Image (cartoon, rainbow, N blue to C red):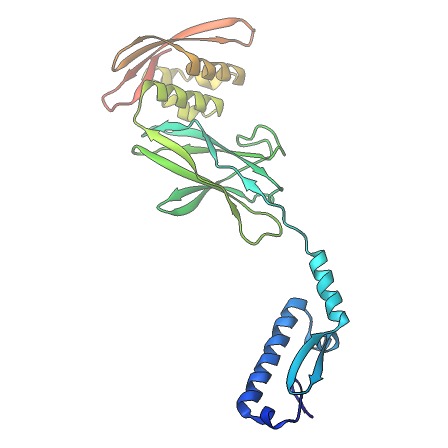
Length: 289
């Protein structure tokens, strides 16, 4: 019997071969290294946890009862990571007009666990790559309706120069997970300007209280009046609803007369007419309100 750095070798002639000795030594070293990583112990404690057995003709490794106990505790104490789900981001409105700055509300629903604070991002897919464009909220601000309801939201201003289909995803970070969870892709259409798309975009700007974007949908005279600056939030919401549900009275290729009705703050029904025209650049604007 001859002691060695990685155990005790049986003193037989066929074990004295240098090639055989190197194989046995490397195998023993590999077992010790892998075992040390798994048990996260030092080399000193490792010698107390494991034992080398001496068998005629070969070198074997047998874990002691202490090693089995440690491995069992590690397996039992490892927390199970719940499966989390992140829904595709939903855009409201689902379509915008090219060349017209529009505020779009993106929402996503996260289930199966709470993400880290500030760990939910809205991504835009650009040429098979993702770019972070905004941080989504579940604290009742920046477009989020209710705090801590697992629905994350954010307003995003978009102004696209051409017709396209935009793709967005959501990434969320969770405690105990090395990689972020990515949602499937959600779509947003960018279309040529129409009177209907102008009304929808204006309604979205009124909902988000974005007066600067809303004024882009009005003609020069209405812009000079700046009537939105003194309009209460309840009246803005009523106007937005009227824009979405208005009745088209007269329509041509470049002219449209609509009648909108809504319930005012006095709980009485009100109605108004507005005229939309298309300019030489193809942009629709409201010139009479």
